[in-house]
Length: 143
Image (cartoon, helix red, strand yellow):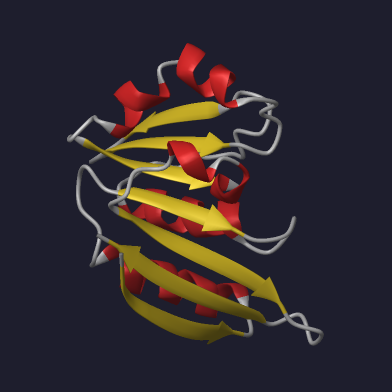
C-alpha cells in the first residue's frame, strides 16, 4: 500500500545530492530502496551520495556484478537488475537473504524489471529526465 509520494525537482548534481541527504534521514537499517529511471538519470549517483555519508567511497554501478556490498559506518547492498534475465538468477544468488538483513540498507536499481521479488515494505524512487536536463525525483513509501 502506498503511503505517500513526494516529488522534487533537481537542476544540478548538488540539488540531487541534497535530495539524497534529505532522504537519508528517513531510511534505516533493514530498509529496501528501489530506484527506477532511464540510463543516466542519477540512480547510481543518488546511492553514491548516501553511501558517502556512511564513509563508503568506492561505490560503482553493480551492472555486471549484480550486487555490490559496501561496509562503512553502515552496510549497504547495491543491486542492479538491468542485466538479469530471469528471477531465478536472483534466487540463485540468495536475494531474499540480502533483503532480510536487518543490519543493512539495500538499494536496487532497475527494480521495476522484477517487481514480483520486491518486498511489500520498501521505498521506490522514480527518476525522470526532463527536456532541460533537470530531473524530477518522486519518492514513494510502500508499507
